[in-house]
Image 1 (tube, rainbow, N blue to C red):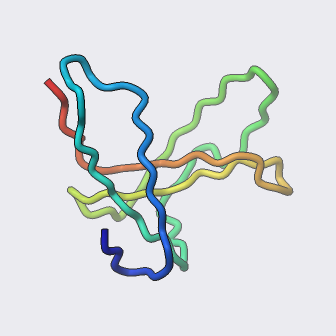
Image 2 (image 1 turned 180 degrees about the vertical axis):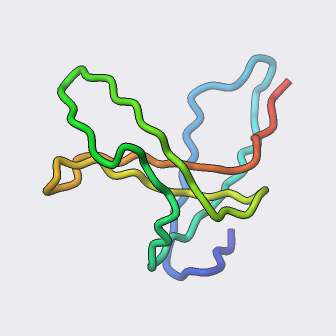
Image 3 (image 1 turned 90 degrees about the vertical axis):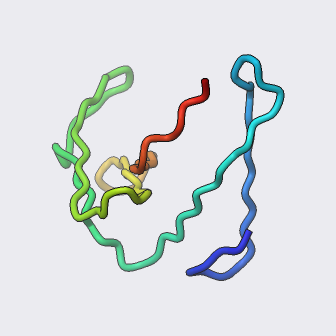
Length: 101
């Protein structure tokens, strides 16, 4: 698969644990994102900081601005302790995927 906007060697792995009922194979569509500098800073999390403890449920709002409709976007939220990043989660926005009958 050709990759525009970047260079190098890329490997894509698809791991499908199960198929929907009545299917014995399934096509998989790959969406590739080339993320480069500078960061645009258009993803915000509210509140910016929050105290947590093990077993504590955390709620926050994520907003993105300035996105063209109908396109796919990929972002990342970083969780840390104020000095070092401890965990990350991916945020993906895009058109509704098709449903399998």
